[in-house]
Image (cartoon, rainbow, N blue to C red; front, top):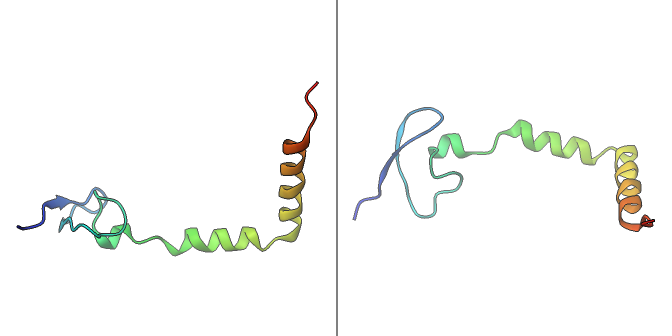
Length: 68
């Protein structure tokens, strides 16, 4: 049984939708790959100790604030 043919929502190319294809069902394999820019932004934000300290303080304040 052949796989269904889909059209990519991003680039318009046709591709076969295979069961174990990573990513979105309406995007071809090349458009479904995660972009490097997004992953590098996450790494940079987690490396800033001042930002992490501010996040921890905010979370602590939100979790343990007293309701009046």
